[in-house]
Length: 165
Length: 178
Image (tube, rainbow over all chains, first blue to last red; front, side):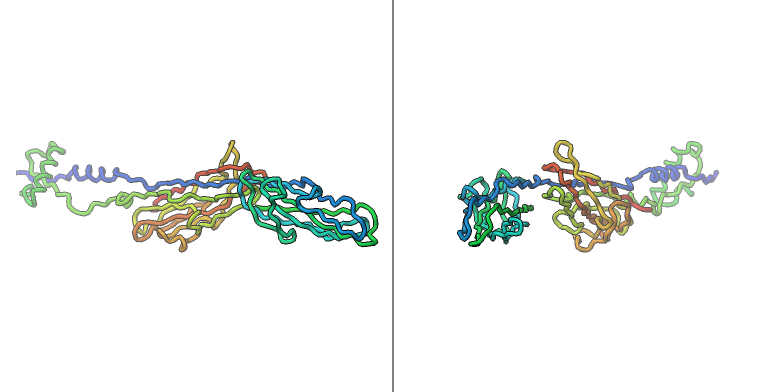
């Protein structure tokens, strides 16, 4: 009767089988980054505010609906909210060292019609939205108050409108 | 006899030994029952997984105006959830796009800062530990084997940026550490 102790080769094989059973040590996942770019804003001075001939001591007014009213044409992203601000709004029209006092009125509309414009105080600005086609029209009227001894000549001034999203 | 000691399992082992070792046939052999604890690789207990939960959403942006999203923004920050063996350290590595792509192939530049990455136990966006997503970072899975990873960033549209929708892909790779 031989008693032989032999190492179990089956045990070794089983351990080797376990060692080769591997699971992924890393993994990955992805997400997206997204953005929507709006149309840029464009502002054009479309019509000057023209008081025409005025006389010393006689005020002259141009309403928003007047033939001499000024107008800014704005384009941008359809229906986007915007802020309107006059960054240059003179108190006088100037001829050399001569001043002609001036005040302004303003209004905006989504269509090119001053008749339906919403009025606002030029000095305070306004918040509104571009139309469904991305348009906005800003109208400018005003009143000049020439002195009785106002020097004759052509008086000018600059009005600047800033529009921001 | 040795071969007959123990349980029936020992008998099975003896048969296995004889099949594996033909020279053992007819001999008294000792086949040890395979008892005890198997040493299983740690990763085999539970695989490491990552799943995208929320996109990084910049929303409406305007030409020339950069827009940033904070990693703590619960609605717009990116989020990826990681699951694995509890308390395990894992390496987090983002692949971040330099641009988003939009209409007619237009590209919108993106940037990521040193504090735009963050991780926390799940559902705790307000308790993040910040990290620089531009490099690798080590986090520890919680007692449930989970963490959430968050991402902020900045979109930098050009003044001449073409209007339209833009997208990019962010990938997070997670790796068990030894």
